[in-house]
Amino acid sequence: MPPKIHLVRHVEGVHNLGRENWNITDPQITEKGKTQCKTLREDFPYHSTVELVVASPLRRTIRTALEGFAPVFEKKKDLKLILNADLQETSDFPCDIGSNVASLRKEFEHSSVSLDFDLVPDNWNRKTGRYDPGREAVSARARAARLWLKARPEKEIVVVAHGGLMHFLTEDWENCCQYEATGWRNAEYRTYEFDAAKIDEDLPLLETSESRLRRGKTGAQPSHEDQISLRLAGLQGWANQGYAVPERTIDGNY
Image 1 (tube, one colour):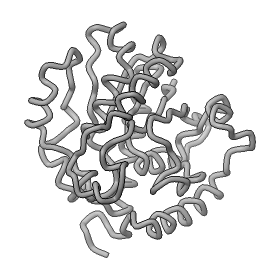
Image 2: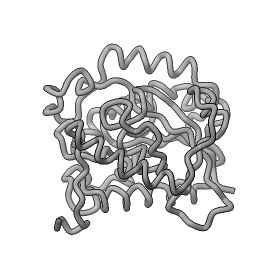
Image 3: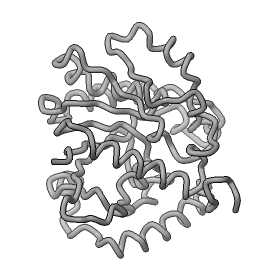
């Protein structure tokens, strides 16, 4: 039985304060972000049933996972925070480029929770090849992350990632331009399940009815066909916002 996935967008980072901060590489979270971590820790209702926490290897997602889901790690003393490079954000703006592995190991060496870097290769922050910001590469690594999650033995998993990447991961494009290149608020969490009845893996994650109601969605979810149209319109909307996802092949050719 595939696991239930609680997807969480990271708390506010310095880059979220204004576009002038997009040139900061791998920015830290803000004071407001620290407060959002506290609120997430207090308000998230599923700490007791979560069996695994996974995060993108950027600082803001690591901090969100460690601080927002501290109760999970406190209950499971031997649990490591798994970092997965496929969950990094889509763009190659400096704010979406992560730190090298050695720097991250040093920064978090005194954390009470061990970090698992097995899925973070040394080239993970170069934004080339697998991690290219083009649509094909982003879609491919998002699909790889979905399949990895689907194969996990745990029954309930928290995934902390990024607003843009989340749309590729879920293939849920509803309201994807509500904010800057995303439909997700900082520190927002939603719950998804794999549709075991579907062989087609282009739309493998469905938001639960409870999760949709939690964020005020009372109507039916968009169909697979509607999501395709929403994706095309959303990507154009992102481009209009200055956050284009280039349309090129994985080898970098347009």
